[in-house]
Length: 370
Image (cartoon, rainbow, N blue to C red; front, side, top):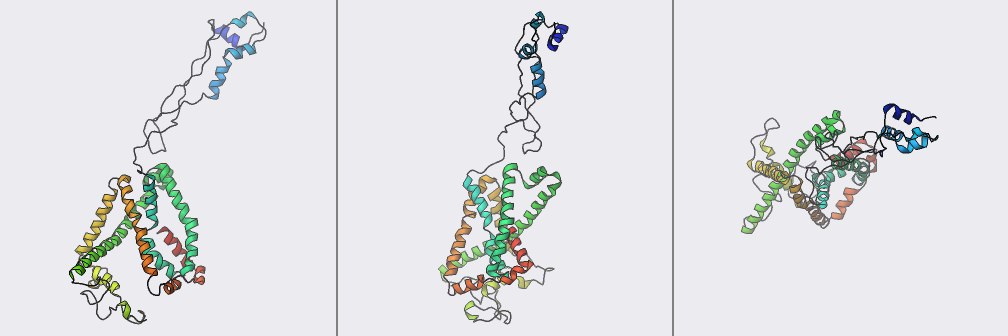
């Protein structure tokens, strides 16, 4: 009688014991290699993978169902039994990840406030009005919003996605994306150092003005002064030949007349004391009051960040909301001044011819990335 290949193999090997069900088993194992992720070297729990196609083929070739279907001559040799094949083990990759040890925001609103806080800073309060006026007034808004839609928002969204996915610093992030691009991360750190020194210096000036206003308020209560130091002439830092209060300008153009406002002289001669320097080669001694103001800013920044996002999440409630309150107060103050409507109209009058100059588009892109 004819025999199947399984019967012949069983006769040659002498498999005479009773059949047993064939079971493909997989053993759960763990992986300690997590290359490319943020938690490298951590043991992860995983799920077993299904057996491979080769394992299934071998199991089916030795199963009783396949044997009975292949043998159709009902010969005595059909009773020869096959032993079950050995069990199979599968090495699997982790399908789940343990909680990362990196800190997270306490509340979602804290993250949103931190993001909103980056949208309003010195670039909006100080730089944007001048750039808009110098590059076409209302016409400047066209290249500005164009750069915002096609440049600023996509890059902003990409930055948030990369940060949320990798949960790493800028150096580690670019190294994981492409090791050749890790220099981009170092460049970001260097730029942050420059920007930090620049911004903290400007905020130090703001702290100096804040303290000066408090001192002037105390002197006003005592009756020793009636004005803020940057609103009047006749102070020790003023140049009496050039200092002119605003109500005495009477349409005189600074280009043709050697005049300066009390605020300008207070900043240049009272705060920075530029008139005491002979140039960049001889800056003079350090002014203690300005040095203390800058040091106070660095100390505030340190204590705002020293506990990571936990402390930052509490600080953003002030740093993100306060600028909008100040801007709103300045808006109300500005539109209630005499001649405000004329000034706004003159400021926003479009100069369409400037849209055809490359400098305007460069200024718009610079303002977006500032």
